[in-house]
Length: 192
Ligand code: FE2
Ligand code: FE2
Ligand code: FE2
Image (cartoon, rainbow, N blue to C red; front, side, top):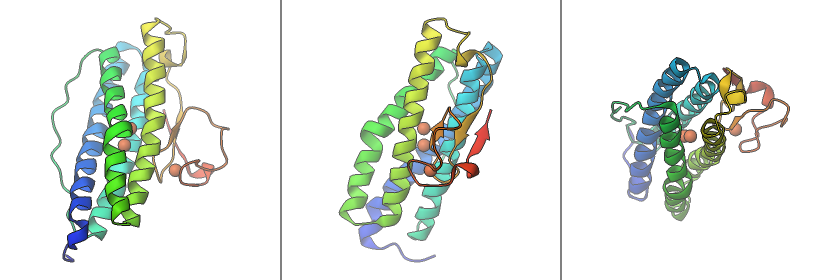
């Protein structure tokens, strides 16, 4: 294993924190999807699965950079607290908002200070994808609170997830390429 350069030490710590956050978000969303299916809120279950897949992509991207910088990607997976689907959606939204407003901007600023292109790329992809998750969770919460089970939250549906950066979309013909990382649309994963 290559030695860790001094200027990469904090960047690696941040990558490890992000890797842990993404790995646990993946586990959490998969558990929340099972609960949403049990509650019959099938579109919310689809959304949890799609966002969960995106978090798995983020974790893998961060792990790759940790290795490239000479670190070792490992973390603890915590047990998941499962509540009602409305509460689970709110917990998911607040996690996404923390990542968008606090965690990734801080980590990006640090990586930028050291001009660490690998870290900047993986943090940027995740940050932009989390914005799509926050928007979709926010919409699902509003619909569920309004009792609109005849909307998209009530039936299983397809989401489109960028296999490179985790950008998540609910519409198929929106783009020809991922607006975040330029990955061709035909490579997107369809998650239901
Ligand atoms: Fe993520
Ligand atoms: Fe996310
Ligand atoms: Fe992408």
